[in-house]
Structure formats: structure tokens, C-alpha cells
Image (tube, rainbow, N blue to C red; front, top):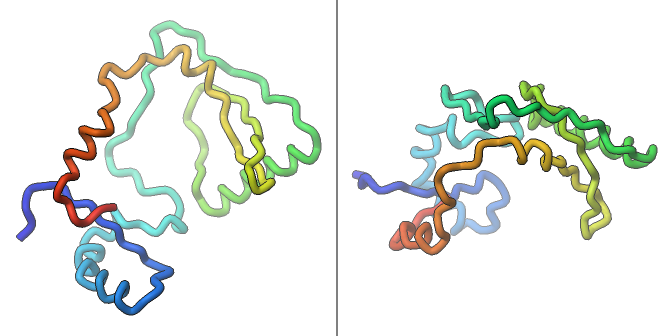
Length: 151
């Protein structure tokens, strides 16, 4: 019988190194099977729509920003195209329904590869700010006190 407290689960599906690790997760298999739609394999693309869609509210009557793309050299343009095609193949991106256009830049990583970053400064200026503060980290950690299974 489970208590009414929230349960957090870590459930590796691959790369288990030892027999003991595999055995320790066998007890979770029925739970994972029951909630298969929640523990979706990321290689299958984006999570399905669940009836709750979040939105960002804009300041009334604010003009929506539509910024031009930044200039890129042919090497950067090719890298952007490869990254976007890779995300489309993995089904990790979908057509945007946003009326705004934000420019994208490439930022070098330590390993020499590139990270795509969206420049959202213009849109951040016209959104209605959240009315609730971000929870404090120590309060969140206090809520986890005594928990044994995490995700």
C-alpha cells in the first residue's frame, strides 16, 4: 500500500553495469509498466499532449517582436541546418504555433562543438511576469526529507 506522499523514481532502462543493479530495479517493473505513458522513451519524440497546455501571457497591446536572423557564415549555416535536421529526425521539435520570431545563435562548447541558443530578450520584455516566486531550494530539499526513491 503506497502512502499519499509523492514518489520519485529513478529507473534506468539501459546501461546497467551489474546484476545487483538489475535485480534492485525488478521490483519497479510493474509500476513502470502501469504508467508506461509517463515513462516514455525519449527516442520516440515529444511527449503526447495530455490535455494541459501551458502558455505565456503577453502584456496587452504589446507589439510582438519579429527579429531578423543574425548573419552567419557558411560554416555556421551548415551547422545550424545539421542540428535542426537532427532534432527533426529525433522528433524532438515540432512546428511552432508562436506568432513571434526569435533569432538563434551558435555558442561554442568546451569540446569544440556548437550549442544552439535562442535570443529571447525581446519576448522577455513583453511577457507578464510570474506572480509567484520560485520556491527556495532548501524548502524543496526539506520536502524530500526521508524519501528513498527519486526520479
